[in-house]
Length: 161
Image (cartoon, rainbow, N blue to C red; front, side, top):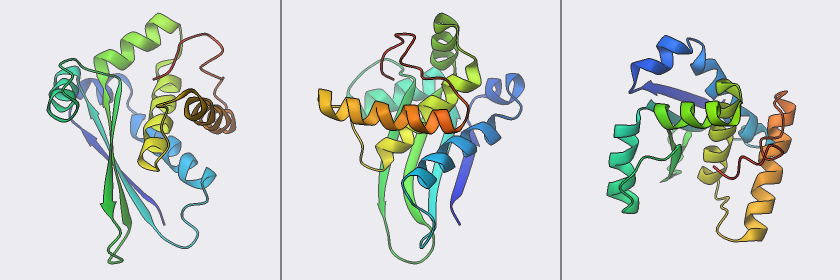
């Protein structure tokens, strides 16, 4: 069975969106199901619901970019066969995610679902370094979101996460 752990590093997530853990878990599990993961082996993902300062520190430390971003993914290399395969961490920055959702006129939880799907795909090796990769990744995101009843985030011209 796949496991999704949720760590709150910013109180605003729980205060404003009490069921956020259900939302992020559902989105991450949808990616794993889409990719056929979980039938033979258990996987684990850690989702950190943080603030801009926390994400800015990580972005500066690991990417040499001194600014917050909406989502960061840190894939793990942990398939020791001793338990669930740790896929890695997906971290969201509250203020940035809220600002983007507001600016695009999107429901916050829909935007969060999109970013969790995006970040989880990164954990699985998907990327958007070139146009073809971006097209493939966006198509996967859009299809998974549709199965969750969430509109295509790219139709509104919001751009890539």
